[in-house]
Length: 270
Length: 253
Image: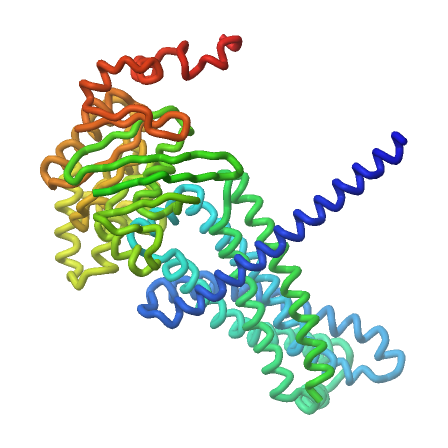
């Protein structure tokens, strides 16, 4: 009896925890969706704060350029070297060029860029807004009749949606360049052959799907990082937790969205 | 005039306010006193609509702000200025941009006109020449005074003060008390101050209201409060460790 009673209690607690977490997930999703809706509404209700938008573009885009270039360049190198293992055995090393170009433009360029921006800029946005929240600056904005969404979220949203795709273009270029240096420099592929095997299979659609995905990733980064920041509680510890949560959730949602887009393009794109 | 009628509010499953009734007369300086965590700041935030009650009504000049749209609420908030406990200056903006925030956002004034107005507001709170500084470079007392300058920049009709002397030294606290009273008398505003500092309360108030156990239990002029025979009020204003407020904690002492 005692064991059965303990079992019932344990089952009850588990169901209660699952129910609580399910409700919290729905509340979180609803809150994020509401913030996204308010942000879109805020974009269409002028005025747009040009100075703040340009400032955010500089912080998010210009300042992230070196790290995006570095990581995508080395990714291109690694991709070329790793694929060379198998392709050289079949004397098919010329296809390294196509593999690098298509992988980088369709997947690695947009995804790696988004992950870099989520870790770098998304965390910074959450920390900044979280600090503002715990020091009552966001409430102060409301008392000054300024909408926190209009003033804080909209400039960051516009900056991310513009700069992340632009950074993705650079990531694509430098990723392909990294593969080129390995292919032509070390794997005895001629320049002409490498360029042909890069440009022939690569279509405008491949590049554009990558850029379209990066724009969606930018929306995810903005909404998650701003939501976590604006809802921070509990002082410095709370801001730290929100910052971690923002990066982790952004990473998960970016990969999930990438999976969804890849499936859609694969099954419906041809 | 501001009226809170049967206001109830629960936060994190804890009831903070229950059937709170309070009327603030036009042009008066009302001070709300009470223990830390009793709901004074929560009451203040209801008056400006930062918080909405779970039930009850909050009206400003006859308009129920719990039922208006966010656009209408923003218009009503233009009547208010608020000084937060921690000053709540915007870290990324300079003193000029902080104090002139609403002037930049909602007026057609030129930069020169805004600078002049900011200089005047800073002058009223006893600060000069700090327009280009950032909040991080200011002392606690200076931050409060800059925040006060920001609160009065648009000539509000109602000013709210949330623990204005908390966290500053006694001399700066006295300066802030005198400033608040001077601004109230000069600008002819309605002032509502929340504090647990009785010296501050006696200096600033036309009327004092005590918040205890989620309700207002006493309200009157400073003299009436000082002469109150309510034991709870007496314990609080005298700062006694023993009394009805701490009756349940007796064994800890």
